[in-house]
Image (cartoon, rainbow, N blue to C red; front, side, top):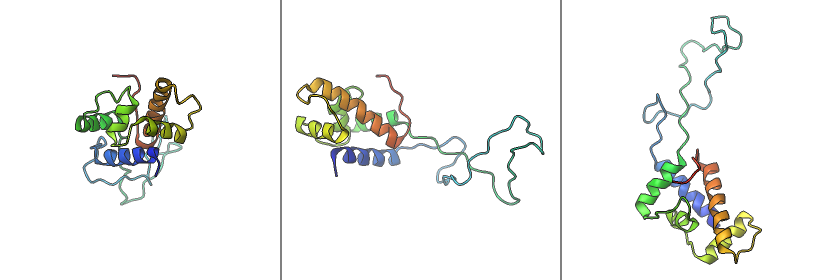
Length: 149
């Protein structure tokens, strides 16, 4: 397993433990992805085109659960690990997930992620790595509000 896989695995575990109840749902309610809510047409009368009929006895579709908030999950991990500048520092971001953040590990991660710059320019590499990691985490976990804090 590569470094990125280790990070994504750790993030997924943290995301699963984070409470993310959807509005209008109760704990333990199943994700009912088979029945997404129908789009509302302009005319909502009984014979309006595009309305879906719900068969008798079948419950209406459940609201979809909310997408995990990556920032909240990372903040929770930071509170546990003491990584204070994970929003800007790739080293602190890697610490959140219990991953080796040494220069060698960062160079390996840069290689995994396809970094084409000069790895001896650690400042540029670290900035690129941080942005790429945040992008990958968001792709595998939910919504991410960008902008520093």
